Length: 96
Image 1 (cartoon, one colour):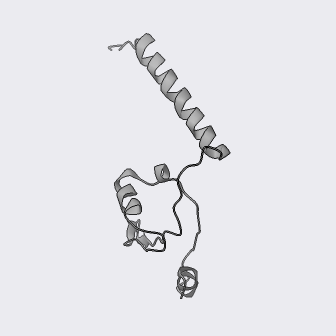
Image 2 (tube, rainbow, N blue to C red; image 1 turned 180 degrees about the horizontal axis):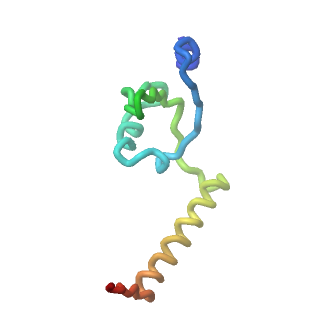
């Protein structure tokens, strides 16, 4: 029986998202990295229930993927302006 069928039988929501590792909370990333494709993670507590996750597949970033290029460009810009902000902006604390 598939996870979708189990969810339907129990009247639970079923989603099939494609996510990036950075979208997974840091405390769960190692769990996602340590399983192979097709494996099911231990239930993850969420509110008053649990998330059941099966890893369908994993793929390395590809420089030809426009999303990968866009994310890399954004990281470079963020780091550049973060460095400039830290170097040239002085924040003043106002005391009451």
